[in-house]
Image 1 (cartoon, one colour):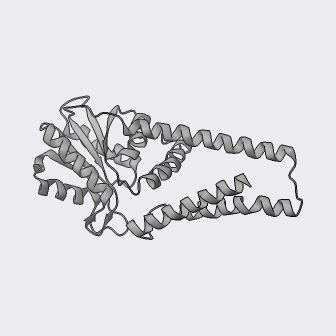
Image 2: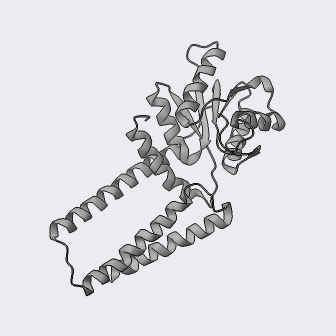
Length: 253
């Protein structure tokens, strides 16, 4: 009965968060459907034990033990990965970097999304404080985007007051790994230093994965954490867990 109540509460929490999320950001919010899947799973876990008990169906002890061990291992994996993500969130940016790379995020038509705006706000703040730093705006043109992410970012920075000669555009990349690789090629072509100091600006939950990609590619690049949407933050953190695991399994990090 206790587990039924716990799973029932978890199902209600997940459904409540799903409603809040789509009311705030729309039904097509990335990863939103996973919360509905979680609701279904928790409902099944809540109603299944009483049904099995009424029908006097019992699982062998080895099955129960295997299920408990598997759950504990998955929980440990989740906590370990989330710990890595949090470590990236609290990293402090280095001052007077030669270059900062601003990672692209979705653009709707020509409109900058909230996540990308927060990255650009952080970029403007850093560039104001470090007037010798050059910025690389990185991101290609994807589905539903009338301009490349890099072009939209460049226009935003110029409108803010950043001089065009401090902006380098990289507009071919379509994922984090390409963001880093293609941006570093631009930096090598532009820089007079053999080993310029480089930072990467992205939303706080994404810093760990971005810097891990850099290390895997052989680059020592420091992370600079921008804010992320507070209402969608939990969704981002759970989504980032799956992204980190995917990148690790694919050998990207």
